Image (cartoon, rainbow over all chains, first blue to last red; front, top):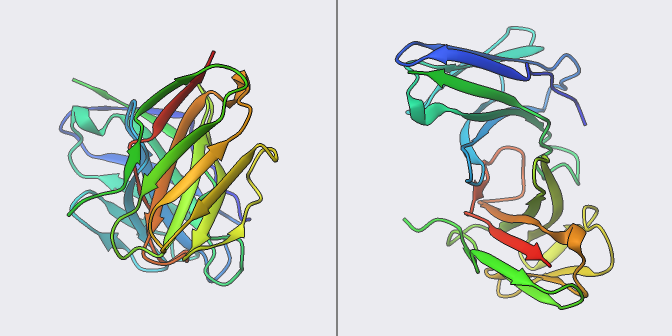
Length: 113
Length: 115
């Protein structure tokens, strides 16, 4: 499976935008880029995913580099509730057995009031 | 609508006993996944179902672990002769289809403690 690299931790001030980077230099053409987050004492929560174009939803935006070797999850206005571990995951769509999510260590985001 | 539900939310059992953990996926979701998260550890995949079939059981840690899904809906994860290292939060997720195109929705988990 193609791997992703994320910073172990990041801090951001409340009510400011947050940019969470992810490197995936070995991504294949059919891999989707998924982001999940896990709030303390909760199960993971889907955030957003995309293939090539930038994506927006009510939770966040996903900016994908033109060569797809990196992406950035953007939280437009961080709140204390956004403090969580954020996981960037590549998911293949053509190979049997890649349907599972393979979680790395993620980025622990701390929001400073 | 209703999300993924799991029961029980907490389970304390003695070493050597069998336990059953239940997962109710989102209605209409054909794919169902089991993961576990040990204290301070990351999430690890256990098994997934597409319908009632389990194409990938590669994550089951030993033959003490088994899972089934009936009617394309509810799934049960069974751990026989529990050991202390089985203590973890067991998470279930469901997805419309088992494909990288679709997101997975997670339940709240079952916290298993083996004493």
